[in-house]
Image (cartoon, one colour):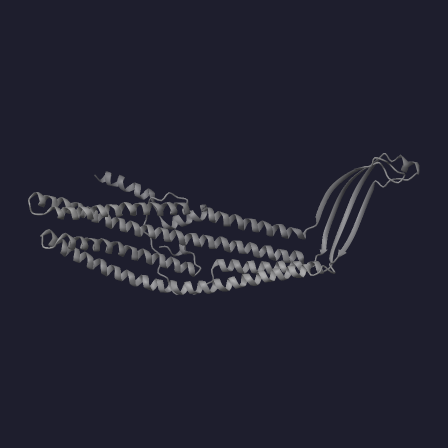
Length: 412
C-alpha cells in the first residue's frame, strides 16, 4: 500500500512547477525577451562599428580603361592597380558625437531588455496566482458537488420510504447540475490560463507548487527601466544634433595613394620618346567646410531637438503616471491585507452556519432552499479566502515591479 502511495505522489513531484523556475526559464526562452536581447546585441555592434571609424581606412582597387582610338598623348589601353590609405585628422567632432549617440542607444536597449524581463516576470506571477485562485475555486466546487451527490442519494432513499417529495430531489439535482456546469467552465478557464502561462514560460504547465513573496518593507519610488530607456534615447537625439554641426567645422583628411600602371597600344607616345608613368605615390591633404546650405543642416538640428523635447514630455508624463501607480500599489497592499482578514472571518462564519444548517436539514427542520444557500455560501467563502491570499501575492509583486525591483529576488 505504501509503495502505491509513493508511486502516486512521484508524478506530482515531477510535474509540479516552481514559480522561481518558471521565471528563470522564461527569461531564457521567451520570444519577447529574445527579441529585446537581440536588439541589445545589435546596438552593441553598432557602437563597436562607430568606434572603428577612428581607425585609418585602407582600400585596394583596380581599373582597366580602353579607348577605340589612340593619340600621341593617350595609350589605347590602361590598367591601373592602386592601394589607398587615409585617416581623418579632424571631422568637426562628428565621430565622437556619433559614438555618444550609439552608446546611448545601446544603453537604452539594455534598459529595454531589463524592463521586458521585469514585465514578463510580473505577468508570470499574476498568471501563477490567478491559476491558484481558480484551482481553489475548483476544489471548493468539487467538494460541493460531492456533498450534493451524497445528499441526493440520501433524499432519494427518503422518497422511496415516503419521507420526502420529488421536488426535494429535483431541487437538489438542479443545484448539482448547475454546479457541474460551473466546474466544467472553471476547468476550461484554468486550461486557458495554463496555456497562456505555458506560452510565456516555454514550459508545459501541469501542477503548480505553492509560493509566496516576502512582505514588502519601506521602499522608495525609483523610475522604471522604461523611463531610463527613454532618457537614453533623448540623450542619443542630443548627440545626433551635435553630429550635424560637424559640417560647419573644417573637415581635414590625409590620404596616401600608391598606384601601378600598365599600358598597351601606346605607339604614338613611344614614338615621341615619352616614357609613361608606371608607378605613382600621391599624398593628399584635403580640407572642406560648409559655408552655405540655405539652413538645411540648421533645420535638421532643430528637428532633432524638437524630437528630444517631445521625448522629454513623454518621460515626464510616464514618471507622473508611475508615481501615481506606486502610491496606489501601496494602498492596494493595505486593502489586500484587510481583505484577507475579512475573507478568513467570512469563511469561518459560513462554515459554522453550514454545519448548523446541515444538521437541521438532515433532521428535516429546514428546507432545501435554506440548506443550498448555506452550502453555496460556504463554498464561495472558501474560494474567496484563497483568492484573497493570492490577490495579496499579486499586490506584492506589483509593488516590487513599481519599485523597480527584481520580483524573483523576493520569492520565498
